[in-house]
Length: 377
Image (tube, rainbow, N blue to C red):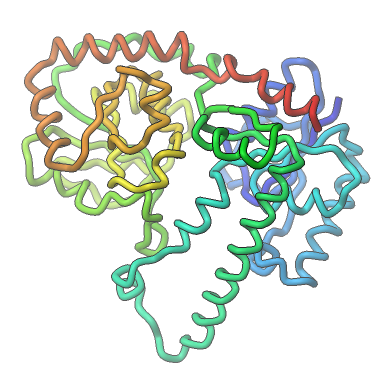
C-alpha cells in the first residue's frame, strides 16, 4: 500500500513521522508532501519527500494561490498514485477534500476549530508590545480582516470534515466533543515510540537540583494564550528552587537559567534525563481541557517527576498519579522547594513515573487507531 502524508508544515514533525513509521513496519510505501524540510532534517522516514509552496495567501485561500497549491498536489498525486492520503491539519485536509479523488483521513493535531479562535485572540497589551506603525494601519486592518474571515471558514471546514471523514485526535476530551458531530473519531495520543527509549537509563540520584522546560519561543513577543508563561522564567532567579534548563529557545544564559536551543529528539531526551523535574507551567486556560502536550510524556520517559498546571486535564488522565498539579506559581514554588529537600522521595517518584511510562505511555499501544481510521476512509 502507498500512503501519502500531506501537511502545510515542514519536517521534522514527530507526529507525522511516527504515523509513517507505523505503516513502514508492514512494508508500506510512505511519502510526504509539505513545506520544505528544515535544513538540519536528516531522517530517512519517507520513501520520497515533495515540497509544497504553502504561503500566507494560500493559507487564506486567495483564489489564484489556492489554485496553484492544488495544481502542485495534483502533480504529486499523479506521480505517487496513493492508496490513501493522511492529511495533517485543516488546510491539507480541505485541499484533499476538494480534489475528491482519493480516500483520506484527517489528523487533527490541535483541535483546530477551538485552537484557531483562541490563538487569534491577542490581548491589547501584546498589541502594544508589538507596536503599530501608522503607515501600516491599512495593512494591519486587512490582515485582521483576512484572519477573521479565514478563521470562520476554517472552523466550518473542520465541522464538515469531522462529520464525514475518519478523524484522528490527540486526546479523549477532543474525541468526546467531536463524536457529537461525526462517528469516525479515533484517539491517537502524542506518546513517544517505544523504540526511542533504548538509550535512556533508569533514574539515578544526582547531586544537584534542576528542572527542565521544553517549549517554543514566543513569536514576535507573542505566545498563544493557553501557553502563557509570563513570570515563570524569572522565578528561578528570585527563589531558591534550583536551576532551569530550557529546550527549544535560544537566549543568553543567566546564573540559574540555561538555554539549549532546538535539539534533535535523541539529544533532547538525553538532556531531559539530566534533570529531576519536568515542568508544564502554562497559566490556566479553558483550552487546557483538550490539550495533550507531548512534552509531558517525553518528560515521563526521560525519568522526570512532572509538575503541571492543574487545568491540563488530558495529562492527568493519561499519567494518573505520576503527575503533580499546581494552580499558580506560588504553589509551584512551594512544591519545587519541597522536592529540593527530599532527594530520596524525588528519586522514588521519578522511578515510578519512568516505569509507568515504559509500560503504558507508548505510541505503539495506540497504533491501531491509524489502521482503523484507514479502514473507514
